[in-house]
Each structure stands twice: as C-alpha cells, then as structure tokens.
Image (cartoon, rainbow, N blue to C red; front, side, top):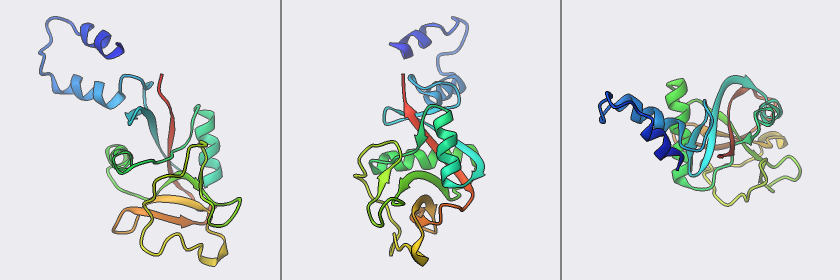
Amino acid sequence: MIALTRASAVPEGMLEDDQSAESDLVKRGAYCSSGWTECSGRCFHYIPTAMTWAEAEENCLSLGGNLASVHNTLEYHGIQKIILDFSHASATTWIGGSDAQQDKKWFWSDGTLFNYLNWCRGEPNNQGGNQACLQMNHGDGKCWDDVHCSREIPSVCVKRGY
C-alpha cells in the first residue's frame, strides 16, 4: 500500500520510465526509513566507520537495530550489494554473529536463529583461542571468518521494517 501511495504521488509531467526515481524507490524499499535498504523484508544500513564488534553492535542498537543476521544466500548477496553500492568495495564488514559466550555456539545478536552458514574453508577456527566475532566478505570467496572482536572494521545493521 505504501508503494502504491508513493507511485501515485509522482507528478503527471514525469516520465514513467524515469530510472532514477524507480531506482530510488527500490533502494529505499517500501518499508524502510531513509538511509536503510530493504532486503528480504528487513531493513539494512551500512556503517562505514571502523569500530570493534561491541562498538558496532552498540551503534546499531542506538539506531533501533542490531548487527545484521543472515538467513539465506539471497540475503547475503543483498547485504554484499548494499556494502558495494555504498563503499564501492567488498571490504570485510562486521555482522552480528558471535560465539563469545561459548566456543562453537554461534548466535546472532538480534536473537534470530543461526540457521544459515557461509564460512570460508577451514573456518571458524578460533585461531589463538579468542576469535569470537563474525566478519563477512573475507578473502577471495567473500565468505565468513571468525576474528578478534577488537578488530576495527565497518559494519552492517539490521532492523525490522515498518
């Protein structure tokens, strides 16, 4: 209904095939606030500022969300596209996975089920005994890697749409 309302608000003089208006509507999504991008019914926001995992989670909380959880390949590729569109790179980025409470017991900080895996070969390996946080876009495979939570990298937040 919101998308229809937005579509009817386009002035009569505008061309129907205006790619920029269409692209803007798709990018923002019908249910996400400005600066957030809809993917799989949820809203995602790329944060380019390098922070530790805990700082990134705290920042996402202040924005009404959490570090992003990922539940399927389509969603993962959608998040990768958001990062690429914003930063013009596929840099490593925090998402909300952690096994800090108990080694090898991974969970998402938003409380959703950890039901999709995209680990790089040989990961998670908990190298040095203290890699408890999940970064995405690691290596040539742009897959997941467990790393030290004190590492400072960009992040992606998620929240429910409205």
